[in-house]
Image (cartoon, rainbow, N blue to C red; front, side):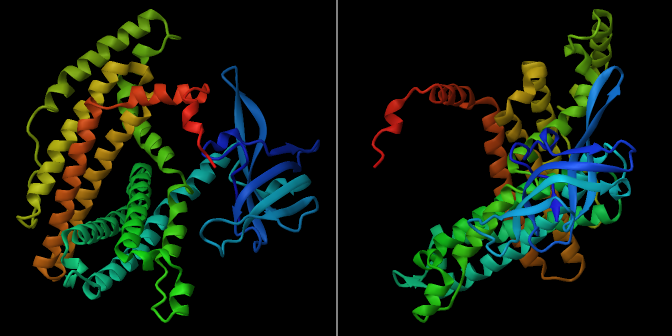
Length: 447
């Protein structure tokens, strides 16, 4: 089992309180504290535990250290205090574990002292691909349930799949399933090839697949209607096929929370996107630096952007891609042009907000949404060409790929519109009023 999360340390693992204090002779560590939501805890024989070890001084400043340990479940002082139960995933063996003077030999340390967060993030990167892979399977199952039901269920004289309202939902499912599988296979292949730092791709894959799967599950329940909301056991009890759409909906909701919530994924992707710009011009906004260094940064960044910025206005294309089907080329050319527009938009936001841009999380989430949809379009076209090259039906492949790309372009347009016109500030001010106790009428009328 993996013991990382605590009551006050969820998305921010550096805030953990579980302590691992070295013994006087340095041969072992003594663990004290508690871990929450340890998956497989009730069955595990070994725990991988993240704990706070004594800080070290770096350049005159104290730096926190998180270290990973292998801990045996039968260690004296270790107690499995509680099994947690959830809305979905009801077979999950997840619980709370407490540590009271638990002695762990130094040789049980994973990697080296202070490298625990790196160990944790490496593990999370793997999880950020296994979850999208599971989402592909779940989404395909839901698509098949809806395809079958939409052909059998007749209302107003025709199968419901012939009504545009239902057809639109199922078309969106089909396109999303194709794109989700494309993104998952592409990112997994890049990881297998050790093709460099893929944290952004895995984060995009996890965020997009989990959110899309939730929408597919929600739409599947709508397509199935009352039978979607009814449990499989109840359906079977009255003689109908026990299709567990309500369970699928419950089970997949957690995917947008664990292994990095959607909000954290967006923040992480945004920070990674801003990092190259901060390396060029970040010193300009660093008030702790001497004015001479900040002035030098102005000159250096000005020289860089004088060359970089005009290029973002040139009409781009995907370039020559040998063997690419003609029907896929316009979508890749669009992605190339939109990526330049995205680069311009991000630069304009930087010049407007400066170092405070990272606080504009809703604005940044729109930029992340654009980037993720562009990644999805690129992966979809690549996957479609791969299938065509393998001899799969060209018309069928192009039909689903084209639909997805057109749908993604509509979402990208919506995101772009929101980067210049939105209600973010008024919404934020409203919430601060609510937190201050105003708008009392909104809390009245509860029975």
